[in-house]
Length: 302
Image (cartoon, rainbow, N blue to C red; front, side, top):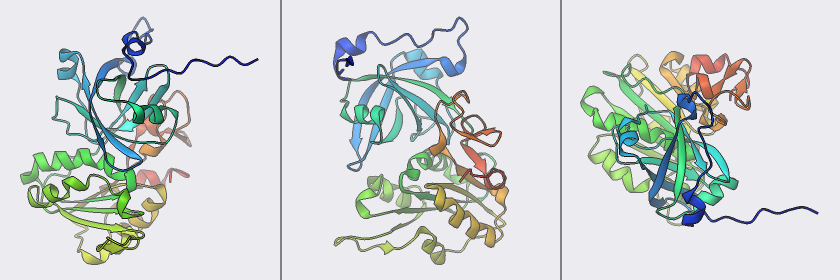
């Protein structure tokens, strides 16, 4: 006879009042440190994705916590488990941390049922980041596919907050259909306020769609890229990397100035579970951000 655990509700105070003891080691490492957070806002972006604003409860920890664009967190729902999520907010924002979460499993299903006021835990930040200082004085080309726009939101904030330090900035974004597009309410601000050229495309339009249709590589036909003065940041489905980065390579954009995020391979964040391992490389420790030259030398990375 199998014993079934009683169902728990993330929104019930009794369940959240005594979370499990996270920091069980005598010597607490940075990766073991759990910040207790409250969900202070939830924005429904699509039927499958929601944007959660998390506020670290302890004001001292809230002030100390910092991250760089491209890094990710381990988000824990006590009693259900934890998942790696890329950070989608400004690294200068001390009020809250934004995480775009797709409903794709047990933990994320529970999170999509959560309401404002629910308590969760975060660990991190983990991984490598985009070299934003190295890109100063150059053109920036950001290319995102589907959910890949979420990790690129952090470098977009960085560029917007230091806009005078960069030259031309372009964002190419493609999804499978119009309802799948993320952060549509921010497009006008990116273009008019932050002076970022935005080109969007969908694989298949609907009756109300008047924009471009086709693969994201079609957008390259509408722009001129200076390979000697451009850095590229690419995030999206692994299949997209090959077509996008191969095109950039064909126009002589150096591979060490193309940066990709392998955030889809993230698991434990500490290189312990080995599920992110490619060859002898732990993508959650040595990544998720790699230059494309490194990715080309990691077989089966994409």
